[in-house]
Length: 97
Image 1 (cartoon, rainbow, N blue to C red):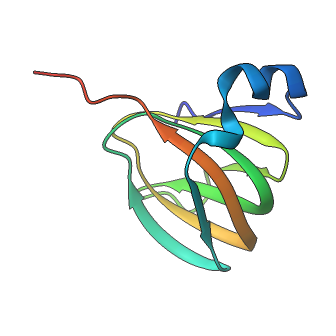
Image 2 (cartoon, rainbow, N blue to C red):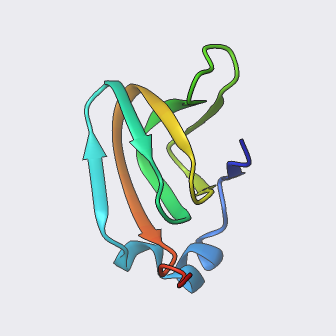
């Protein structure tokens, strides 16, 4: 699935990335089908989620509050949110064909 999770990155790294200036997104517990058209980097302020690739009910990546996560371009998945999500995120600029 190639989701990269960095647990508890340093405040220096978060500052260098400018994470707190990124847009925010939040959602309530539940299941959400998502497609990532571009690579996303996000930092979870609150919450916990299991991400299942499309068509899988057993393979998943779990992450939560304090994690810096990179989600690959083109991933179709289901987010199974167990605790309210509050995250900062940014997408890589679109690549031309």
